Image (cartoon, rainbow, N blue to C red; front, side, top):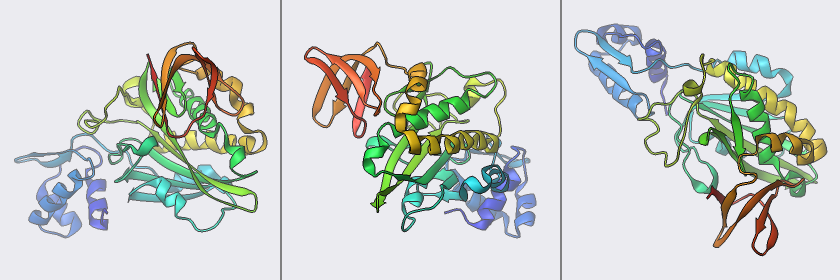
Amino acid sequence: MLKEADQQLIRLLADGQFRSGSELGEALGISRAAIWKRIQRLEEFGLALESVKGKGYRLAQPVDLIDPLSLQTVLAERAQLHYQWVTESTNADALAIRGPVRRPQVFVTECQTAGRGRRGRQWQSPFAANLYFSIRFPVSGGFAALGGLSLAVGVAVAQALQELDPPLPITLKWPNDLQINGAKVGCVLIELAGEMDGQVDVVIGVGVNGRMTGHQARDIDQAWTDLASELAVMPSRTELAACVLTHLLEMLPLFARQGFAAFLDAFEEYDAVRGKEVQVQSGEQMMSGLAAGVVADGALRLETADGVREVYGGEVSLRVR
C-alpha cells in the first residue's frame, strides 16, 4: 500500500514538472537516497517516472487525482463515499460490508492492485489513469429482480459519456462491455452481496479507461481505447466520476421499481451486436447464430439453426464473427 510519504511524493510530482532529489528530500524530510527508493516504489503502481541528471525526477505524464470532498458534495445524501488511494478491488471492498445497506455505498480508488473483470480476468488499473469504482445498493424482490442489471448500468454509463464534448459514439456489447468503434473503453461487473428478508444487496463495479499509456496497457489482450484518445478536451477524473455516478444513482431507483424493462428501448439504441453473426460460449457449450436483440429480462435473443434461443449473462463470452 502507498504510505503517507509516497502520497506526498506523488502530490509533489503530480504536475509533471522536474523536481530535484534535494528539493523532494527537503519537502519530505528524508534523504536523497530515500527519495530514490520511493521513486522506484511508485513504479510498482503503474506510474512511469523519468530521471534526468541535473534536473531531477518527474512523472512521464501528470496525474489527475480525484477530489473526494468535491465528489461527496455531488453525491450529497444520495450515497456515502468511501475513497482510498490504493486498494485491491473496489468490488471486494463493497462486498466486505457486513449486513444489508440502507442507502448506496460508493467505493472509489486511484489504483487497484487486484482489479478484476468478468470470468476472473484481471482489469488493468494503473494509478490515476482510469476510473475505478463500485456501488453497493439494496434491491427488494430477491435475486429474481436483477435480470438485465448489467445492461441497465451500461446504458447509464453510456448516457453519461455522451454528455462529454464531443458526444462519443458509445455502443454496448452484450452483456457488459462499453465500446467506441469496436474498441473496449469500459466494463461492468455485477456481484451479489447476499439476500436477507427479500432484499438483496448488489455490487456494481465499473471501470472506464481515462488516460492510459501503451506501457500501462501492455497486458490487455483485445482492442481498447481511452477517453483521452477520443475527446478534444479531457475532463478531470473528479468531473468524470461525478457525471457517471450521478447517472447511475438516478438509474438505480428506477431499476429497483421497474427492472430492466424500463431500459430496454435505450439499450437497443446502443446495442453493438444486434443483427450480427456471433458466437456465445457458456461453460462448455458453444452456440452460433444471429444476435436478435434482448428481451425484457436482459437475455440475448440468438437465432440459431435450431431455432431462437434466449441466452442469459453470467459466465458467458460473446464474439462477433
